Length: 336
Image (cartoon, one colour):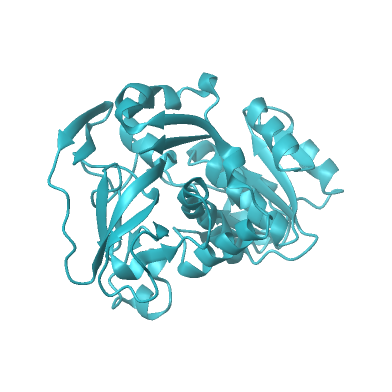
């Protein structure tokens, strides 16, 4: 089978490999769709933490089951996606129902080789039923589940102002889940095209350009209170640090974005707000189920995000262009 390997930052190479055979407890998926996310882009440009080269990227996956073992309820030919965070099941996080932050987690396409292949073998326990969704929809369940997990961490209550910083795919999905939870969403980004997308496609009522007088705009939108939930989906150290000042007294701040350095903020300002700071890593099966249910009910239309499509053999030539904001990429989708 053909695979696409990121040899080092900025360089891909197509390679031939033996197609996997189903081992005990594993299933084989014929890959049909691969969504490209920020993790893939950061790995390509050399800025992704917890990463080593060479590596086969790809974890936003959809495909058809070819062979399976110990996968009760699944059948050959069924369309599926996967939970791409392979956990150990025995560490303190796993024992406490938090497999998404397992001590020895192996994320497909990050810590181990991923889905930019024609056939992929995965542990059967990480399969997710397609439930009648298309391959395009299934490939987007994972990034949307990340947003759903962040919203669940935040504990959003109906009517709360929720500021989501960063209108990339993860941020957009977070906005959708915040809306479904009853939050009054405020989208913030430096890209006016992304903010227009939020208004026109996601019906987000409040948008703020981060290059404007952010504090004044947030005070105006929230009638002087400031947001009670702030969620970062940028991966930008400056954006993360700046967002501490946007918190209302008693607010929760959830970090979904990831960067390599330290976070800095004023302790007196944070303390007087009795602020709560949380990280949100990956997602759980509960979040996957929530997104699939929302898709089936028509509450989320993930195909709106797909702005670019390429065949598998064109990825090497097209990938670098997806990092250029001028190309307007929200979600690139690879078809096999």
